[in-house]
Image 1 (tube, rainbow, N blue to C red):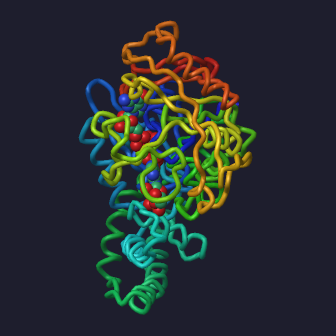
Image 2 (image 1 turned 90 degrees about the horizontal axis):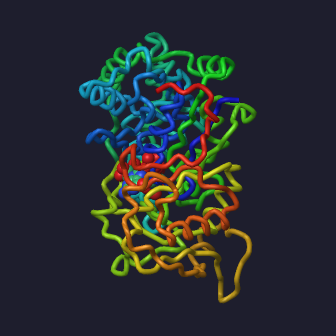
Image 3 (image 1 turned 180 degrees about the vertical axis):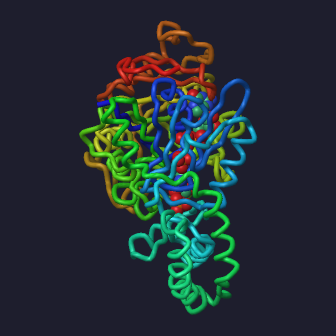
Length: 435
Ligand code: GDP
Ligand code: IMO
Ligand code: MG
């Protein structure tokens, strides 16, 4: 089966965009399956940088067809701006970007409620991206959501919006003392979005099924990361979609038997943006890396990312939760100047080593990381052309990671650009190379 899932293994921002763009040279179909514009995927090539929030990272290579699947939540204003932004830079989207009619729509009340709830939560605030993601998924689960196929139906949409807005305004006014949102201007605004987006709406799921039936290489692009998963992540400090490989398959409408390889993107260290436990966190004043150089700022919100050492407990748990076949390890170059590098190999609670990954955020907050210290390589990895070029201690670091995770590293990345990558294993096994 020619289906490949690319999933984040940590707390997002592992470099999924770069890896997707790279694998796209061999894939014809790319699907974003869950999440919304809380995601920010960065791709760099030929001196250009693209930041994509909703559009699949495969759009930048002209041989592809891209899909935004049913499991996503779409802010139409943001999507239209993003389409316009890449069209202005010469990337064609017409007849090659398709949106599932079943994807849910983010309305302004979702963004307002996201902010209001965060304000009210106090200590329990999550540090969301404020993009209305949680409240939109809440409406979906509550059977109050409105979907793209309904937005583009001129008869249905006004009726749906009117009934949902009545409930939402009650919530805004009675619970939060906010002003209500007026129906007519909102209807007018979203009707104009529908006119723009209508040409992109298509039966995405059947198109993907046909691609797979024709043995055409298909990539499912994960957003966020394993520990932001609403079910298995560091709840409640998570996002509201299922970010694991299984959730990605559901969001794309693809059965697990169609997936022949699941690749986990993992940084050579760990980062997290937003609140919640980060067991191998390094206090900012002791941090080994300069945020600016490592570019550890959120792609979507610009917030500084928190930084920790590579955490093998996290990595091994991600291998199991996603059924990973291999790892794409990114940002090795960021460790180039260090004398010593730590790997978290276990956790202690109250001085006693624990063997199962703690599922309660409270418990994970209390763990003490057990470290192993490896010597650094103190030489640049940014110009590698083969594995043989790796400094001895860098190879040793990577081999230790493979050993701890129990799966191979299939892709190694040592710079943001496409060419700063070594493809160690051919994920698609040479089936249909398109570029
Ligand atoms: P995503 O959300 O998983 O797609 O990751 P982001 O794009 O939010 O963040 C990853 C950042 O690291 C981006 O600025 C990338 O350009 C950059 N990046 C990706 N791989 C590498 C790498 O191997 N080395 C360096 N230095 N930067 C990288
Ligand atoms: P990509 O795809 C990193 C985090 C937010 C917050 C939590 C919930 O670029 O890896 P939300 O707005 O989703 O309700 O916020 O999830 N978060 C991300 N962190 N990368 C992302 O996406 C993220 N998407 C959401 O910071 O802690
Ligand atoms: Mg990101």
